[in-house]
Length: 500
Image (cartoon, rainbow, N blue to C red; front, side, top):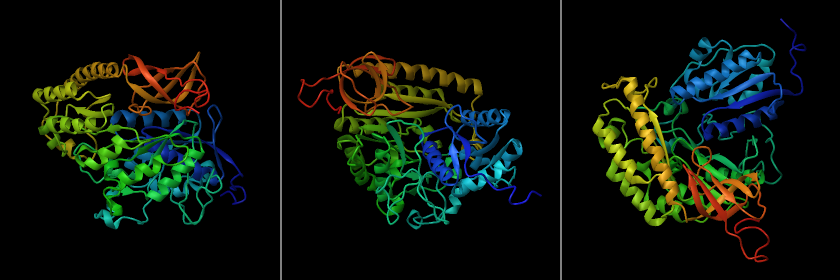
């Protein structure tokens, strides 16, 4: 056996960190990056060689799982030592390790010791992967009993018991006696995800996420405000609040209206010009929350509503709330307060027992709803879910046919909705300069990555991070074209309205 001196880890090593999946995984990766840098590892820049490739995987649906597997195999084929973390790794544990001996597999519980884990990988050690378990069982059934329980929640920035300095932390932002930020920004986007909670207590029959992400746990408001200030100090201008279920925020802290009080606090953080909330459960959207989202300065009037279907019969089989009529009533409430509000949703097509009448009900809803962004997904069985055991499964080719039909309709309807916005005034957050007086950004109804973009024409220079007032002049599919509204020279400097 090599001596401990021979096994000594060099002062610094380099790891390539690959992030797949949603914005929640992006936050988790930034926590991992901070822990790694604190433990003697540098995160490789694009094109740099690395001793270890750490893949933060996605395990949501079959396509995402396959992408994660392909990424792990590609990294191993390049000769690197490979480590799988994230949802796929947590969900399958030892089974994934057995199927893919090329990679070592981490649990969420390994995150606090991630640097030590990679130290072991670098010197050729292996460990036994964890046995998969239902992480909901790690916390009390009662949400009120969950605060301060010692279960690691990725992206919540908990400090390890051994103590740790805070990576990449400017002075004065998070003192040792107060909320502490454990995060290292990856990339220079002016939009930053901020995880407000993890896990889910809902029992949708098609969804496996609660089993491997665990029961719902909110982060404390003071921690979120401190992290928001830290993000603003590191170039963020928009906060994208993420979780598995944002409308449940605060229920375990004794206040179901906590999101309504948190949003104005985050919008008031110096340097932040816009706050956006993702993943709202229609069954939990309260009138007060609609009012805050629709009318709070600095908070985007943006409603990411998880409808999933519009047939009441199918939704009951999914163990979800609502139907076409109720969803349209909710949208009417939103637009009464904010006529230009952005709305997006995802829908599952081909759920077991879905009939042609159910599909027609969904088509009718989409035609009436005027959604800005629509995601259509074909149903597939997921391990460990109730839906996998339901009768009435549709043939794969029938599911694919329905997906194609609904996706074509969705594309047409989204283009129509974008065209309706011509003539509207829009505040666009600039993300990229295209050259020739043209810039790329996003209006309040356009979330990063998943929705369309707005190309801004401006005769005066602006920069990424500027919030520019525009008028929409055209559309191309879901994307918009807009012209900056310029102030009179000398009124407020040389820039367009809203820009420095």
